[in-house]
Every structure is written in structure tokens, then in C-alpha cells.
Length: 191
Image (cartoon, rainbow, N blue to C red):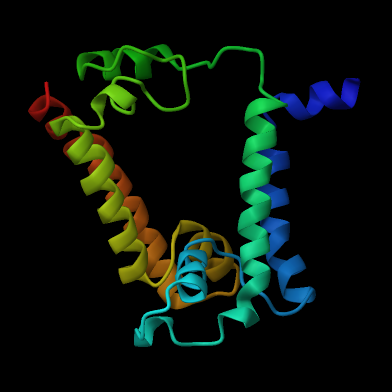
């Protein structure tokens, strides 16, 4: 059962990073496929929405492999969550805990802070801002940029795509702005 324990533990960056990076050449060699997850929603909508919307009128069946990819991610997430859960508690740096505590986040037991992402917050101002508005901005940004972080930062940069470099730079700028400016302001707003 040593392999089982190995799978349950967090993997270091020098193993996980190259494994993610190897998906790019593998997908290209296996059929000139592009890595990315955000386009899957378009394929799902094209497959199930019967409306006559030009954005969804294309041969989505050519991208059916992407739907299997998404199904595999979903299945992998389920297996990781329910069968391979790491029994060790999460380790959050003390400096990060101190910074987040000043913002009103005190629960560090899960991957997402329950102070923000809990069922009790769904119908509150906090839920409206972080679930609805935040989700909308993620979807809008992904569509506006022509892809998400995985498509641009992993696949696009590996293919030396100039738009992916620009998108990745602005993803990072947006992340820094959100972390240091927007999140503290929003958390103070919903206190």
C-alpha cells in the first residue's frame, strides 16, 4: 500500500509541474489537440442547447474528446476527494493566516475558506459578490481572453503564442490586484 500512500500525499512542484507540462506535447502528438478546459462549456452548450444561436452552430462532435477530458477531470476530482483524501491537515503559513485573519477569515480547515464559501453565505451579500459576481467575472474574463489560464499559460505559452503571453501577463496582474486591493476591499464591504 506504499503507492496508495504516495498518491494521497501532495506532490512537490518538480513532479507535478512537469507532469502538467507533458500534457502539451502528448496532446499534440496524439492528434494535434489543444489543452484547455474553458472551451468545454461551449462544446457542452452546443451539444445540448437546441436554440439557433450562431455561437453554438459548429461541429462540436469534432471536439468530443474534450468532453471525455472534462469527464476524466470530474471523475478524478471525485476519486481524489472521497477515496484519496490526504489525512494530514492543511498547512497555511503563519504570515498568511495573520493577513487573512485581519480580513475576517479565520477558518483554515479546507481548501476554500468557509468564512466566504459556505452554504450559509449563498443568499447573502457575500454570496452575491463572491459566488455570482465573481463567477460571472471569471466566465467573462475567460471568454474575453479567448481562453483560461490553462489554455493560455500552459498550452499557448508552450506554442509561443503572443496572445497567450499577453493574456498570462494580465492574468497575473489581475491576480495581484485582486489579492492586494480588491479582496480586502470586498471583505471589508461585507463585514
